[in-house]
Image (tube, rainbow, N blue to C red; front, side, top):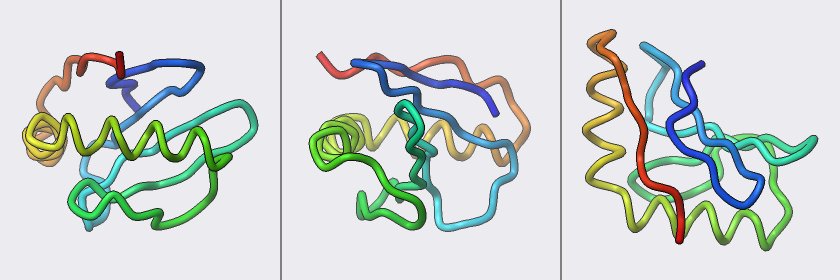
Length: 86
């Protein structure tokens, strides 16, 4: 599961050829959540509220890049990284 970004103790990952809808996996300490790219909604798992808010903010700011990365993951292409939340 490639890490595409990390910030403030959060690690964000994408799986190659993962099931839809397009989403990222965010890991923070012992917490993990799958969050949709389009709606920034939690699909499964959980994060502390403050951390979830930061991840959602990052998704909204980087949505275009995340769409592009999701397509690359679908095509089994190298993913690279996305800038962290500043």
